[in-house]
Image 1: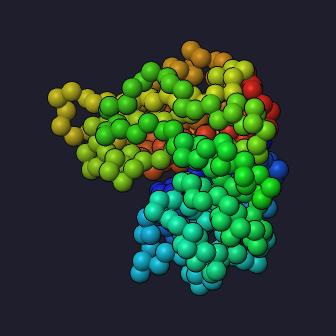
Image 2: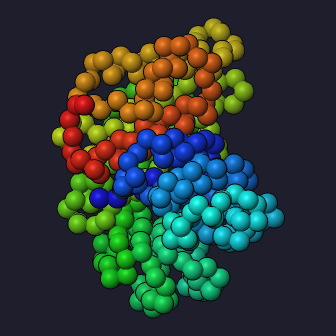
Image 3: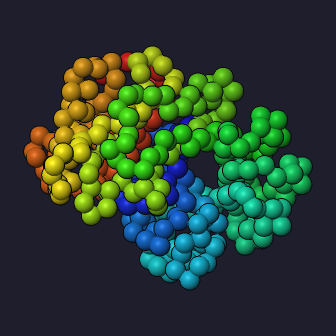
Length: 329
């Protein structure tokens, strides 16, 4: 089973990949999907370079949805990456970074044909359904290795039509986003059941992502009222992914509180949860970094929290895909 974390090139995702490269075994079944939507996308490439130099692979979306590059160029390529000095091609296999086509509204067959004419597409993400037979014909000349299907936007019948063209991966955006950190419920809830779906459907793997939207960033602006740690996990013996939000704050009658102080309140709840729920695997390196920052009373920032929680999630999904439903460490 393969796990594909869907990353939008936001802050510190590249750093999480660099750390994961140092931690995960070489054969780890983790293949990140990179959709570089931010104008600061280039800051992520060092981490991706580290990931790829470890003999690993990644999918790179060449027509990112938000089209948010300097100059507004909607298509990216190896040439552009090399010109910016972002990846050291001398250390990276040409087959490691797979150009990926994102099919989404209001895309049509003509737009697909344009991307295929300028990029050697190796993977396709289906975020909507086009006419299946004409699309299959367009893709037939390409060596497609992965078809990633948004399971909420595509039907089983549609997905079956592409089985002969590459490995099937199911994608779901299941993270419950909210307007501010203090509004997250601290009651654990089921994030998705893709692992069990994948097992039943006998497809190659699953993909998901834990992100903030532009409207509701994790840092809560200059004066955050609360800090939230978003920890994904799998209960003992289950194949369903759960989510727990640990919220620190708000602190009543204090107009301005440092984020690091709010983090301590959230991390204290994480420490308690880990103690009271030994059946949940929280011995990841990412989780240890969070707890170590708490124990040291470290001046931690929102970007650090995102880096560590994403690392924890990647480690957890790798452990599941490698070992199956697992219990306490």
